[in-house]
Image 1 (spheres, helix red, strand yellow):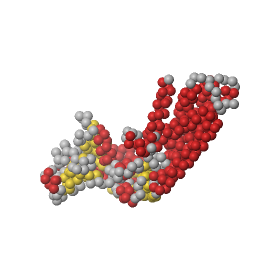
Image 2 (cartoon, rainbow, N blue to C red):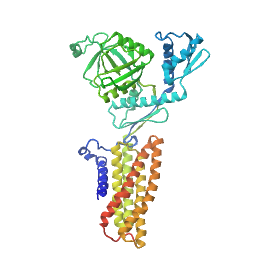
Image 3 (cartoon, helix red, strand yellow):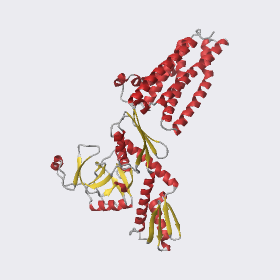
Image 4 (cartoon, rainbow, N blue to C red):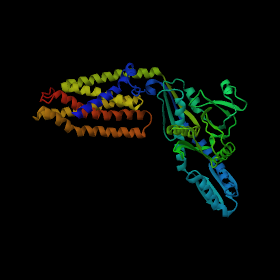
Length: 517
């Protein structure tokens, strides 16, 4: 009894999830986490952009940084200057000649200590060569793609665009789909800007009256906090350290087990940051991103070595968010729009309307066939199909998956397979009754003996759906999502829910089954 109640509860719950989608007027009566299925670009209309991450420019910039950091590492006065000549950067490969052959091993060791495993370092005589391997370049490309997607997502979210789809496509491409957006130029301008992050000292001599008046002294700017736009920070216009020098930032804990954000600068940034923190102890400096202040911590002590720590009463999530903003503040590589298209809302609405007509017509014909062929069992099978459809829509809405035309095709295909999964037990029941088995036992035997066939057919299709989701992109993934969800709901409704309905109809009695002659 408990099993049957659990099956009915699960079916009803999933169908209720579909109500806001099927009847948008009822959506306000449901909790906020139960919403309608978001429609994709091909159904709702909007803009689509295909962006390319310019890895060639990124590798050039990386090579220039490698050149500067190599020079800084070898002329480090604290560790001793290593004399060298002919330092060059040619096609991404940095090379130099150590003047004293006895210092070649020391130079390689120092460079290895500076760059670790991120750079391949080789030597031939007194010549040392540094370069990124293909594997390292692939990792940098992967990281640049992930960071670019994060930045693009953050910028688009700032526009208030609903249900944007931003995903990687191929090795260095980003597909951006914005349902409901009919002005892609604005989006392109926003995405194309490379975010600028800078570090400034805070002007502590500005009075509250000056801030209230909005008149900043010469050389000072009033910049708003990112999280509190109504509150401003007076910062000096001079850039002390550029965000281009920031190599990494991570959320961590300090000695008091309080969340903080750690920062790591490159060699050039480390020197500037060390000078800044040495000369301005107990003063505040502001971290500015796109003209807004992320944080304005106090310098507690000099910070040499290019490693800093930002504290400010963060929660752990706040520290993680700030670390992400610092890490992905500037695009790691330029983005180029290589394809764009706009889909009109009218086309999407027409597609939905035609899809509704086709779906209703198909369902009606299926119901007529089932009821004509299997009588009362056909009525129960039709009810099962309706529950299956509601569960597919409800689970899709719960996961926040976007419904597209290929997704609708996946639902239609699933319903077709569900009809087959309903018919198989009925035919086995017919065979058992003809063999003289009592109807109540024949129903149990029919479901039990058809279970393996139903599972084999649906699970093999589920595997195909998962493979399509893993290796496909765009429309293929949309098809795979609804297909996979539909396979699972089909197994649930046809194997368990349909059996509950038929048991309820049979009511423990050997009733005559109308479709067995």
